[in-house]
Amino acid sequence: MSSEEKSKILETKRNNYRHGDKTYHAARTKRYRVKLKMDVIKAYGGCCSCCEEDHPDFLTVDHVKNDGNVHRRTLKGTQNLYRMLRDAGYPKDDYTVLCFNCNIARSLFGTCPHQRT
Image 1 (cartoon, rainbow, N blue to C red):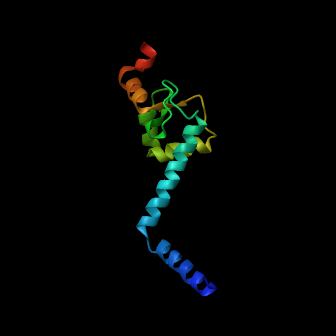
Image 2: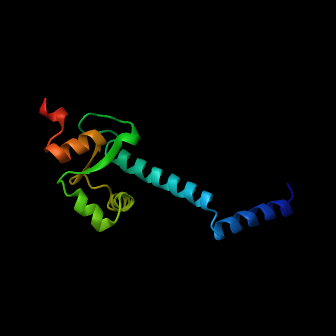
Image 3: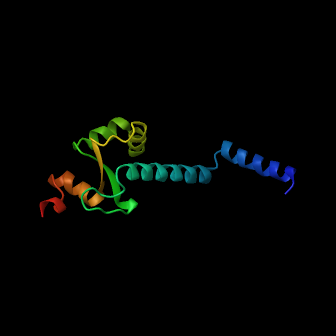
């Protein structure tokens, strides 16, 4: 490939970026969000602290003090929570990882069924 062809390809990529190639931006944003979530999950042990589920699609960050709803509103979203945790060095006292089942059971019933048996 000649340097002229490389220059044309690079210029096309730049133009697509500048003029809003939505497919490119969407894919890039998704990769960033997935990586950010995976980094947070890994920092908190990589599995549910209750049932040890380790499939990333099922895992979420849990606020140990049950103030997650209020906290997420002040941060305006989950991605901001993940960034805040990363930037704060992954504080362990107030957060843990739970699967969605354990998290919702804890929210609705006060404890997870795994802890009641």
